[in-house]
Image 1 (cartoon, rainbow, N blue to C red):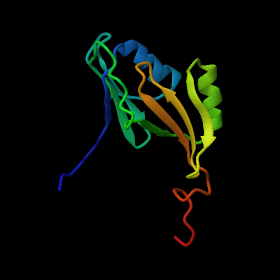
Image 2 (image 1 turned 90 degrees about the vertical axis):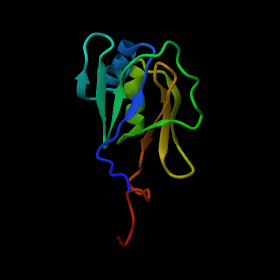
Image 3 (image 1 turned 90 degrees about the horizontal axis):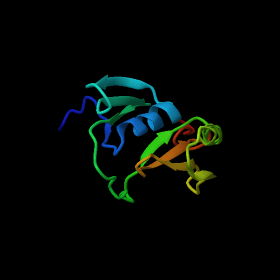
Image 4 (image 1 turned 180 degrees about the vertical axis):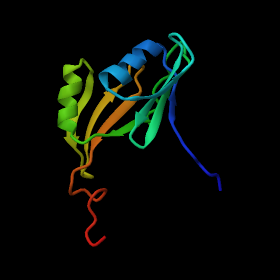
Length: 132
């Protein structure tokens, strides 16, 4: 079995500075580390129990794969909606309680990568399991 010690999601943006402004400035993700210098430097952000790395550059954004999403859990989707909207982030879909019980809001990064912001209600089975 492979022993995984750490992991991260790697994104190669078309404009690293614009993406750093989005993830660090508008979403407010904390920087775990940076490497290299100048506008092409790599930046790794904390994502709760994981990491998001922006490094390198591509000339044109890839067509988003409909099966790939960045899933970020937040404590309050309505509050995140107001904060992001006030910060100029385009909201693809405002918070909606899904049939499976999670509250989901959709946004996209500057290159069109779909991001799902998810609130797990207190009574949802992910959090609440009677008898355990």
